[in-house]
Image (cartoon, rainbow, N blue to C red; front, side):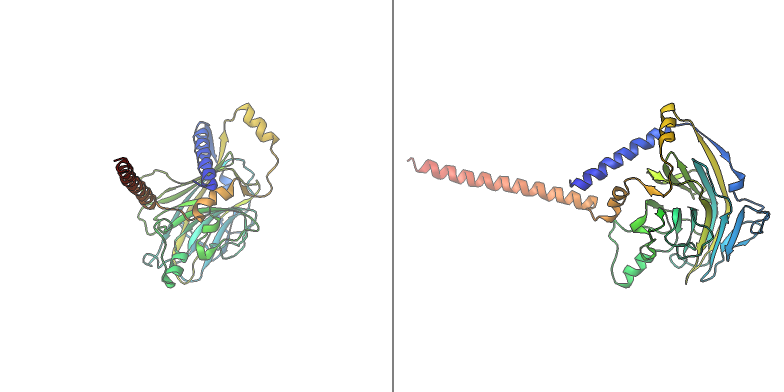
Length: 342
């Protein structure tokens, strides 16, 4: 095993241990209405009477905030007017993506943001590139796969992913989202999520507590959260804005937000943890600890399980073959040696 592989393994063990440690902390949650968006959307988009602002093609209906209609080349957004100064929080997103397009003939997806900038149009699911903060994307169109098909190339089974796909990214103002590669070079992790044209509700769960980012989904109609990603060492400044954006291109979908509910999390910490938090410097630039190790796995090519199995198998067979050849040669040499004494 290479040196980098050992470090990756050690980091994963560390993250797993931290995960179980976080579960031991009791938390209480309180709905923060000033940072939440829900029916009947009274005054949303109007000046002075709402905490939320619409942008682009977004519109209010009785049932949802429609970020984009099922039409080509549309962008829409809804942004909070209030900066969030909570230390630990949890965002629950009730959303819906639906349209007439068949599989992989729809696009492009929606995003949930916690960023320094707000109300800025751009190429990243309707928001600006080189953003500062956190973006969680529900990507419904496989750009990289289509480019590879055009070049008559294919993914390996190890790297191929199923769309729609949920992923997260932390930007510091200078990191660009790679649209052509579906954000792979800068993603923290993700999971596939078949969220289009569902007959039941679909939910996205984003939790930030004790410098840990957790994303889960509920898309099966069972009212059960399914793990998507869990990353320790995520450092997000306070005072950023929540928002939701969506975009369509040559392909389209309806991208709807039914509700955004933000909860303040009160975490019961030990005196030692409180002291450590008070001693920490204020976070001013978003970052992720050990980001190189996190991205080492997806970026480096490695052997699949089947390849490893056959490598080990043929190595053992090679060793056995060499041992047999060695015994045969030794037998012939020993017999020739005895004949010389007669």
